[in-house]
Length: 326
Image 1 (spheres, rainbow, N blue to C red):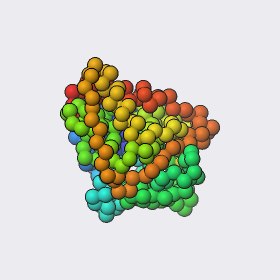
Image 2 (tube, rainbow, N blue to C red):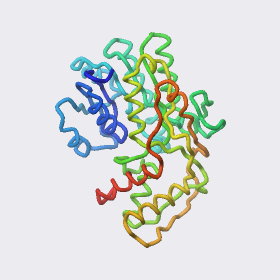
Image 3 (cartoon, rainbow, N blue to C red):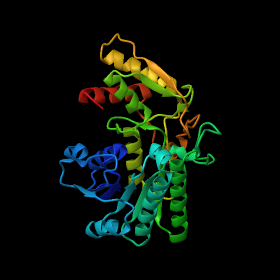
Image 4 (tube, one colour):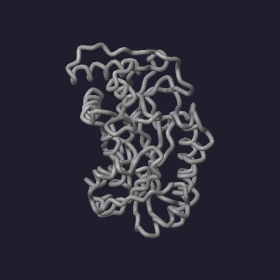
């Protein structure tokens, strides 16, 4: 159970991690240990929202075994949610560092779990481990066919978790979200298409689509994924040892998504100016089709996503507009 427990969130200053921290506060965690090396984020941007004595921040690289062990020796941690990762676009620039970092984090956490420094691990995987859709919709048994080094590293992490669980009888579970979006998504060169599109609109730049725009994704709002992750922690007897896809079960073409963002922005901003869309060559490793199958987590834990794409995009665009910049 989350309530009255000490919970660690690695990557807790990131987009999804920061939302998860908020969700854990609401769920009644007695203490939340935030681990982040601030590779993509500044603590000053995240921490003011957590004016709460039970949230404690450590600037630590989660793959550093000795430093992580020191944190665990100070804090009596029950559950670890692992979201620490170098993102997909980074793997196209520096594949060796990306792979070694992502796998190294999971190995460190698994070894500390094996040695008894905490009790339960919930690891955030990625739909990228599947590559392009071979069987629709894509459930937990869909064949692995990663198309980037990042996706390969996430596949390796999932295999390591299952291996440690079988060899050492440690308690683990995996959550596999599809195409997350929502407020606070990063604005760097590693940003996803939704914040990148909103950024260009706010700057008055031409919006860009890579490829023909017919590639599809299953967009899942961040609050739905947080709710699923907390539900897993609160129903450990059902979640332990399992992998759960979290998805909307609906696929959206990239070109349609970008046009929808433009239309929502124009409506919310009462703008009659046309937003130009530029089509660029396809990016390396870009999967063609994604559509998740959310039935297992519904049948096992009773979870269903609640935020439809239009509502989620409106919430997201309004959040960025309220900031005046992305």
